[in-house]
Image 1 (cartoon, rainbow, N blue to C red):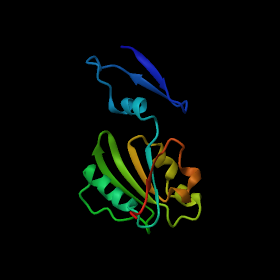
Image 2: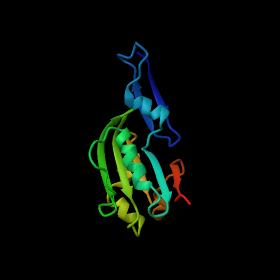
Image 3: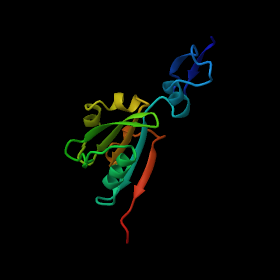
Length: 146
């Protein structure tokens, strides 16, 4: 069977073994690398206090099948939820409001979490850790109704 190598923009290589893929299907991890890239999907939630960032994260979690309460992780900084939604395996909810230095999130394992393409990460108050938010992150801006 043929083999191939895919190289992402980050120049990380993965080897693809097409054995057993005669029907044209591609295994999930390979599909992630092609469609999403080789890192987590990061969504930066920006807006004033009380503008709806946590509510959005709660509703987002419900769509992904999380049945438990999704409180703001303000005091614990980060909360992870197991999911099985369109190839994602973890929803990571981060509240950077209380972070004073980017190093604080790095100490919680940020690099490993942000490298995993099966993670979708919602970050409230991303402006507190600007050096850790990749330029390809999605951004949603929240405003109070006037």
